[in-house]
Length: 310
Ligand code: OGA
Ligand code: MN
Image 1 (cartoon, protein in one colour):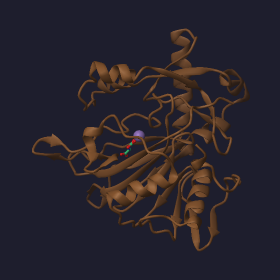
Image 2: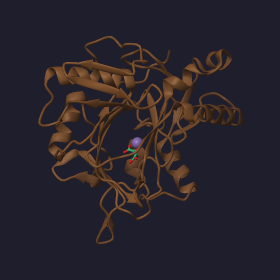
Image 3: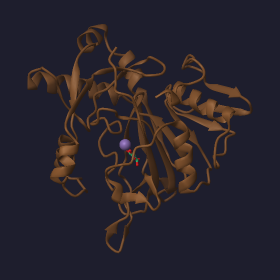
């Protein structure tokens, strides 16, 4: 896992901008979300570029590189420089010859979906239903929907460390050592309930490969040590060892905390945006306001460590 470790200790996260070696970060959101200027992703980042990207990711949790013109191979290569890639079990949406890259899209070809149609429909962090959730996700904008000049299909990010920090001391003490169950099976049921499930039911084999897991409710960030809230609307189904009603109330309270606009950065996409987010430090949500207007992105996810409590 040491491929993730930044070469520099985490700095205070309040820097509005940072500069080094001709690169620059500009903070776009509330502590999270920074645009990196001065780096063009090609076949490989050099040592200085990679160190700068890792540092910015560690400091700002979501990084945005704009105006990138890259091939699927180059995206995979960039992502591999940040960590070990996971081959998604939904590999029927893999980009040809790039098994680690999946298509996220509402586009249909001959009536058949070309990509995952419902990615990010509920607030979540990627692959939290696995023992080793995704550390980072790399999403690249290829076709971005617009209506009357307005960009549609934003992705929202909320700071799981900002939301944790703002909890009362009593709540922090209450949840310090609790664990919660994350379930892909329950997740599909939740999506079906909101009426937006656009996936074939899991086969028995897939179900057997996706058993429920439990994780700490407060997770210590593996590289900068920040405590991060780790209960998601999408995948967390219950607090381990707590009566159901009490568990539901607590989870709702924590979800409310996480979706307070003061912790949110809303990304308005442009074709050529390459975004990397840290799934421990932020939760995310896709906004489905574009109907059939085409939207297409390519995504890669990196296998992270087993989450550790505080
Ligand atoms: C994802 C995801 C959000 C979006 O790919 O993991 O949640 O806006 N996507 O497409
Ligand atoms: Mn996601």
